[in-house]
Every structure is written in structure tokens, then in C-alpha cells.
Image 1: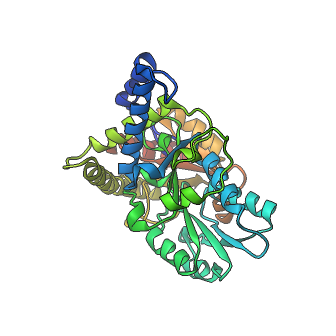
Image 2: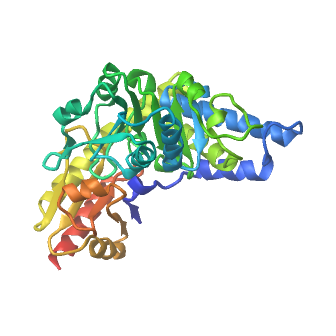
Image 3: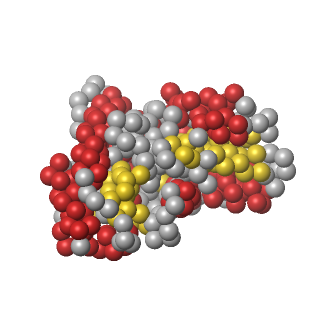
Length: 383
């Protein structure tokens, strides 16, 4: 089988599975108690937090875990929104997954905040940067922006976007869910205020991750239980967490770090993700150009060589995305289809509710698999 559904969730390495099993068999306990497995659980979670901090280039006390990116974003949006009211503004974009749009809209509805939406250019698959600049005002409180589009693969210049937000006295919240498996995240270089991602998109379990600058986490008016820790980052972590999933998340980071040499884990991660980005560029070019030769196929987004991840969406004239996805299964080709919760992108591309077909390359994707996908699409298109 060739798995091209990585943008919706990658396959999991054996090392990650074994880390989860080892935790459950040998260390399973609740935290902060005096017996050995509880202390071992504390140590396991601390190591996982440290690993994720290395992935993001953050402090270990700036990394919180939760159910998923969506839940964490709702949590932060409501905490920030307690300070805001009528006349305040939040900026979102048409290019984003709705997990980084709807939590801010819901908060705005509750608080009377205005939401401004930055347009995307359907022809290029990129944000309208002039429209982004025009969206800011003296009342802008936050920019919510994706590091990369989970539909089109478009990579945004987060450092530049964050600078623009800060110039207007606003915060930045970055959705890095799609980007995390394909490029180097550096919250210090980007200077973003918050960033969220999910481990299951970079070879780990279903665990959400939230980065926040320590001073901002300390100042968030988050709902919490009175006896719970008020220290950063635990003050963001409500209830008992998914310990085995967090341990697996740390193992996923270590898996990524194992793919390249380096003196430190951060250096190995930087080298690994940089190498994966170069490899992904080659695979997406092979896929893009292969699809271009098939009659009836329309591709969308940034062409190879541009700022993009190895994720391609396309349609076949006269065939629904569901029909195409099902037709590829007998060839051993697994692709996703629909709107991928990036429904505004799909609407702006002029597609129906059935959406498009999406094929994403991961670290385990080979050139042979890409060629098989192109051949399979050609056969489906010719029927």
C-alpha cells in the first residue's frame, strides 16, 4: 500500500508504538505522587516536553499538551478574548484550516469582537499580501495565520507576518499542524506569540501541542480548577493528560531527530527537517509534472520550486473526488478527498461540496509510489 494521506495523519514508526507500549506496561501511573511509577511518569512527561521544545526551539516551560490543536485553540481564544470587547479586531485568513478560524470567530461572537478575513488568490494559491497589510488597524489584537495550508501546501512567511502584527501591537497565533512534518519550526526566529501543532501529523500519536511565550502563558486568564497547578505550562493543561500519547509524541520527535546527524537534538532535527523539505520538493515536482500530462486533471496551488509542502490537490473532469479516491484503492493507493476542514479554500477554488483529491508525500514516500499514483490517476481519468 502507498499512503498519500499524510496531511490527514501520518503512519507511525515502530519506535513510537514501542514507546507507548513500554510506558503502559512499565510506568503507567498518575503524576506527582511518591511511589516509583508516578515519579517515572513525571520523568517521562518531562522528557517528552523537552523533546517537543527542541522541535520548536522553545523553552520546556512554554510547551503544553492537550487533546488536539483545535481544542487548544478554542482554549486560548477564549482566554485571550476575556480581555477584548467591542471595537477590538482579530485577523484570520481564507487560506487557513478552520481550526484556526472558527475558534476566533466563536470568541468574537461572544465578545463583540470584529473578525477581518484576508483573501487568498485562487490563481496562485497564496495569500493576498496587500490585503493582509490593509487588514491591520490600531484595534487589531491578534493575527491567526497558518504556517502552511493543509489543502494547497502553500507555505506562508511567518516571520514577516508576525513582524507586521507586532508593528500594530497585535499578537500572532500560528497553526503549524500541516507544516510541522515538512519544515523547520523556530518560534524564536519567527517571534510568534503562540503556535499549535499535532503530533499525529509528524509520525506520532493523537496529541495536541501548544507553544506560548512564557510571559503570555502566565498572563492568560484560563479556566482552571482551584487545586490545579498555576505554573506555566501546566496551567494550560486541564485534567489528567494522555500520558502514553505524550510519551509517544516525544518518541516521534526522537524519530525525526534520528534521520540526520548533529551535535544536539535540535541540530539533528534542523538537519532532518531541512533534508526532508528538499526531498519533498523533488517528490512534489515528480507528482505535479506527472499529473500535468493527464488529460482532464486540474492541479491547484503553488508550482514546484515555490514555497510549498509536498501536498498536491487536484480534480478529474467529470468525476467526483469520492469516486476518484475509491477508484484508486484497488491500485493500493490511499489518498484523501473532500475539503479537509479548509472549506473556504475549496470554495474559493470554485469546487463543489464534494471537494478535491489530496495526495501528500511523507518521509516514507518513494519515487516509485509517486509514479504508481500518477499511473493510477491516468487510468481512472481514462475510464
